[in-house]
Image (cartoon, rainbow, N blue to C red; front, side):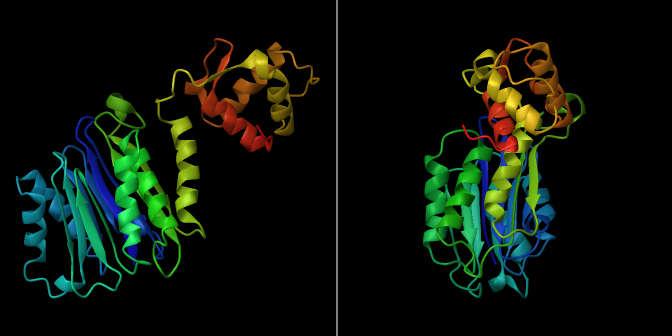
Length: 290
C-alpha cells in the first residue's frame, strides 16, 4: 500500500523517514524514528508495534537485520510484512515478505533503504534510490526528492492519498538545544489528491518559519524590488500607501507586519535586504509572477 525511504546522514546525525501511500494518514503508521538511534518503516499489514520495538532493540545493540529478525520471529503474518531499518551509524536492512502484494520489493544502499508494495513496478524504488543518491543537500531534501521520484514513476498503483516526512537531528527544529526535542522536520499530509507535492509545499513554509539554513547569497535588495513589495503587500492588505517604487518606512513596516503575522519574525534582517525564500513566498502568496 506504500512506498517509503528510511535514511540517515551520519555526519550531521540526521535520521529520517519519508512515506507516501494510497492510504489515509500513512504518516501515523509507517514512520518511526529516534534521535541518536535510527529509523524504521513498517508497512504492508503494518504492525505499529514494530517501530518502537525495533528502535528499542537498536538502542540495546542489535543490528538492523537482527532487530527485524527478532520482531518477525514467530509472527504469523511474517510473509505479509515489509520493514525497512537504518541505524544512526548508517547500517541498513530491509525485509519484504513473499505474500506482499506485487509489485513489492526493496533496495538497500549506503545509509538508506527504499521499499514499497502495491507499486506500479520496480521503477518506483529504483528511481527513489537513484534520486536519493544523486541529490545534494540535507537529508530532508534528499528524502523529499526520493518521494517525488517514486511518485513520478507511478508510486502506489492504486493512486495517491497521503504522505509524510520526519527527520530528527541533535538540537534540530523548533526550540533548538534550549527547548526542542530534536524534531527537525515532522510534517504530514493525511488526505490529498497530490500528497507528495502538497508535502513539499508545506515543507517550504516550515523551512521559512522554523529552519535556519538560508543560502547567504540568496538575498534581495528591497530597494530594487520596492514596487513589487508594495504591490504584493497592498494586494494582501498590509500596505495602504501609494505605489511609488521607492522603499519608504511604510513599506518596511508593512513587510515586517506581514512577516510577523506569518511567523517569519526570525527572518527579519534589518539591513535593507530580504531573504530570497521569504521574498518568493510573498510574491507567490500575492499572486505576483517573478
